[in-house]
Amino acid sequence: MNHAPAPSRLWIQNPLAAFTANDLDGAGGLVIEDGRIAEVLAAGEQPSAPVSEVFDASGHVLLPGLINTHHHFYQTLTRAWAPVVNTPLFPWLKNLYPVWARLSAEDLELATTVALAELLRSGCTTAADHHYLFPDGLRDAIDVQVSVVRQLGMRAMLTRGSMTLGEDDGGLPPRQTVQAPEVILADSERLIGTYHERGDGAVIQIGLAPCSPFSVTRQIMKDSAALAEQHDVRLHTHLAETMDEEAFCLDMFGLRTVDYLDSVGWLGNRTWLAHGVHFNDEEIARLGAAGTAVAHCPTSNMRLASGIGRMAELEDAGAPVGLGVDGSASNDASNLILEARQALYLQRLRYGAEAITPERALGWATKGSARALGRTDIGELAPGRQADLALFRLDDLRFSGSHDPLSALLLCGADRADRVMVGGQWRVLDGEIAGLDLAALTARHSEAARRLVAGG
Image 1 (tube, rainbow, N blue to C red):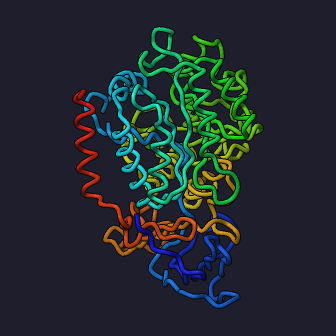
Image 2 (cartoon, helix red, strand yellow):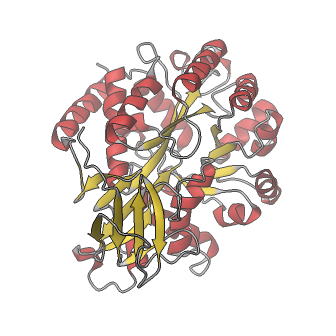
Image 3 (cartoon, rainbow, N blue to C red):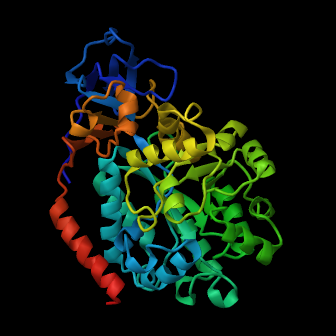
């Protein structure tokens, strides 16, 4: 794919508004050099040295590139599937597992491309995916995803998920979707050794992600924690998403969800959890003290009627809070700026309008998400950070009559970035991904989706 090269020193000048995710004033814009932010300029301030190009951002709201902390890329093939439109989590999964077990490598390539393209156009520059399905013919699923991420020029945290507790052993997934622990651990080591990048500017990172308490054994949780510590990679799993899950943990392990997490060596700052809806006061304090992060997935929690998480309390207790769109079969979109809007509104139902501001919701989608993924080089506009940016225009009819540009992004429902930059390279120009034939991709993806649910 052809990408427009970035000039050696670019001034993104005088944005309509800038959200830096910190205390810096970015009203004068940014200077980008060698893929990083060299300067953050206050209103009226000039660059400290000559620039080779100027981009007039006076019609744009400037944000750090948004960061998605929880997704299932493959699920774009089962959006709005009628048999599960009106079901909660457990029956939703029971109906979908047999469909997902038919995934092929080509299906996953198409699903991943669609998910990442949709995210990129929504202003997302880094995405975490939780892939735990490895049926016959799809053993190299993470390798497929790596190729797509690189093609689109994004960053990704790709987690090697797993399921070991089949329905015949008291778990939820069917037997054909589970793997032996030794296979999981060997492949996890292979992926870390082959793809995991460290340090500032990392493009591909690998995490370990046993799926959930109701689909894996305690032993694979313990073994994954030990392997993650050995190789210094992160841990991810679903936890406390529904009351059914809490009941399962009590019945299966005799423990509530956070006690279970602690018992398998996961209660620490290496871990980030998907959902975290049903934590009590004591559990919130323990998660905060441990620095265990939570990926808030408001649309999915509403779609499956899972509940309203206590995100402000988790954040105030010390637990990093990020945002995730979750799988595109429980959202059913991959749009992170809309997810920030949903987080704003859902959390206001719990805490009130004054406590949950547009800035707080955007902070979850940027710096909070970066912290959840263990990164300090992205998620805010500051000198030395990676030049990952999203620029939104406010000239659509939906914004007419709006007064505060930053608030208008969420309150008026922005859903598509005009320009997106990753590492100093423009990846989206005038709302489109350069070199990607969306019509052809949509046709192929839609045909694959029809074939998958039909069983052939």
